Image 1 (spheres, rainbow, N blue to C red):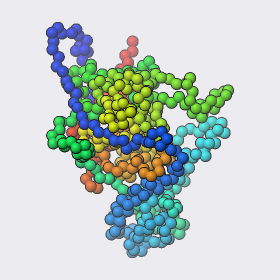
Image 2: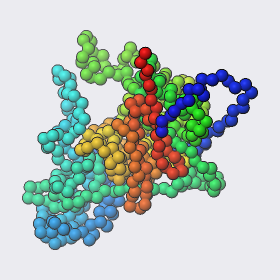
Image 3: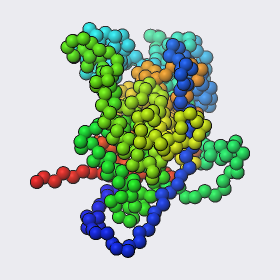
Image 4: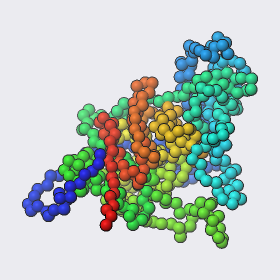
Length: 506
């Protein structure tokens, strides 16, 4: 929807004695989750091995994958493979090393991708000896091939092959593979299964449960919900012309500079979600390449002379102007001043001296969220009874490098059906080394799944085996597209508002 402004209605003298109607913003129910918050202080450790994450992930998903595979392959018909493998019923084997040559069987394990262009920690160390760093890799898939897919568990690895093996598999995916080992020791895959979408809670189920636990009366009647606005990639840089597009967005969300009907629509927006990359480049720590390119003494780590406070000041001004009228959920992204490893922790309130008055006091951990709610990436919560799950975009951007094509919605769907927020972590996506549990696993199916900082706006609705319906939203970068996403919280229909800047030549 394009905003058409009436210049004559804007540029006029005040009307003496005129009475203007007051439009109230639609309220919303908001119940966030602390699922991805890491331990504080000395309780946060990094000395544990990352291999434990894969074993925990496999242990937690194995039972569900085995159940689905057993049901699907109980009456398996071999079809075209009957002449090669004979007329036999597939047998389940417990470990990948229990597979026997010529025997039709299936086994559950973790996918591992061996790719020639995939980053290697030894290559990172050897960068010190390069004359010039190699260009960034858009894809890990080589044009000359050479990729290998393996299935592994605590016993070992099994190389997989076969024309029916999906090309969309990535490292960290838990699957059941049906096939037979050939004479070369390769497991020829006929079919694969994965956990698929988990159970989806009913609308208001989480809110009603929270009220029941608190001993409060469950609400029978709820007012009609409004809309949730989602934006990503504000990319505040601190330049002189930087605020133009964000100012247009701010005026729209506040109901300024638009006609009466558009003010009414703006008042229906009950919350703004900022899905990552609010700041263009906030890191004051130079890369190894930047250090190597400078002459003189090398200086590693934090360099105060390189820090530019303007981007965070611009973002603070934007939030401070918006927060008296509209609550904001702020998710960090790849370029924001937060930890790099997934899950990213909330942006610190000290970054926003003007806006932090609208946030909950940090000492009160059980306090309800303030109107400025700085959250983790990924983030999960309930808005108007619907379960939301969203990220700043890093997991999907990393999946893109593993698979052919550029279908972001398909990648988002696969991620949900694999039940993992970031399957490629910690292999090629930095991640906290969880030990006893993997909170990145998706235990409940969301109603809305959004991913920020994508090349273009895309949306669709997918369905699960138990009737689950999930609205997928690939949110584009606002700085490049000028697009704001609006989600109707009654119908879950998606619409967009387009902002543009027109430069007139003199």
